[in-house]
Length: 241
Image 1: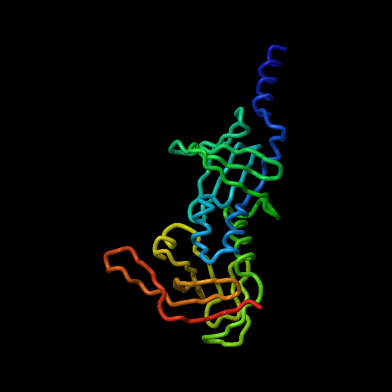
Image 2: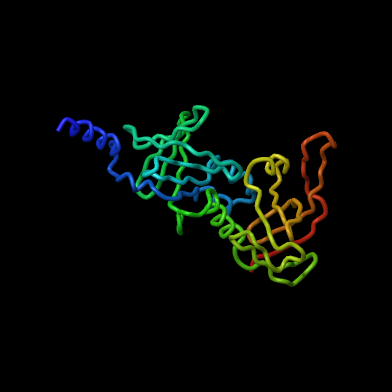
């Protein structure tokens, strides 16, 4: 019986003071607020900056792991119970507190900044960050786009949530710039990557409602400086049907 008290205390610790079961935290959680803001706004980069920096969490209570993605980098942390639900500790002293509020996951950093996440649909085995990316692609570029101006005029373009694109002359893959070096090099512009057969280049784009303009990216930096991309000649104008 001498082990009964320590086991009871351990169970109390793992339960915390929350009304949720530990396994309720499990799964992939995405930043739906950032996606909604991107769809409603005119600047993808601004929407993601305003609602970032984290876009996805993966929580594995059994293995005491929690990881997040900011659209450019990923971090793996150790999950532990405390009196405020769960604490995630990362190398370098970074920590996050995870709490459930109804069906939402709240992540709060030591400064008090709190982000809200909703559970992603589908399998939890998808790579970290990919669930948010797919939902963003679907909401932001989903549907049929008709080329109004540029090569392939009149064709219907479809951007898939898996990063493939059809109907756009030349490229068959795309990726939206969400954070990191590509955002820095964009110099405040929204940018995307277009490629075919693993050969591609960055492009500047502007999206307003159902209109999407894609421009050549012109580097205005000096040779020994980090690239600073600006909009050059307009290549395509697309309209969503």
